[in-house]
Image 1 (cartoon, rainbow, N blue to C red):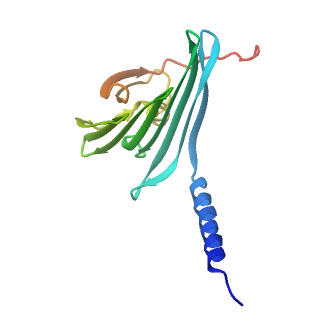
Image 2: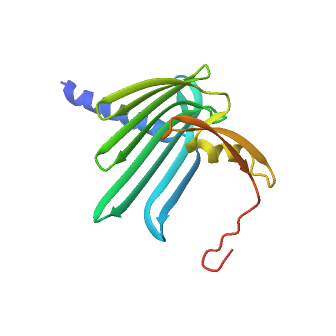
Image 3: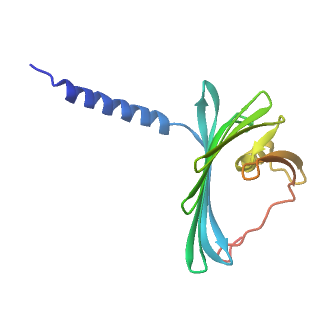
Length: 193
């Protein structure tokens, strides 16, 4: 009996693809949020974040994916803004690596960063222009996308106060942000709290 090696290769390749995908999607999702974005009472887009267990370069960590899409009409022209960030963060949410893509209509900006030895190495691509820089990255500094996960991990306790160092990808700088947990918010949906 003759075996067609091309067909066998395709079958083995397909089985490997299915196996790898099942491993990829078997990762435990730690958290996920969907948000609507409103402007003047009208929905103009959405925000989505998810955090799941991952391994990055042999290190157990979380993979955080966040995306935001906004469509607005300015002077009769529809503008679409889309941002997507994939970040690998340690179990305390301090970043290891991230890649952020921002698109405004046909303009694209890509920002990649790697944190090592309290330094953040950044590569920024805007069209054909590429720039690189390195900035100090103190301990306990987080990406702006991670801050809600950091607060959840540290504890949402009424009266608790935190001071965070947050790296703003748009400004390429670190800012100090005080956060105070004031209490539970009462939300009313269809006349029910």
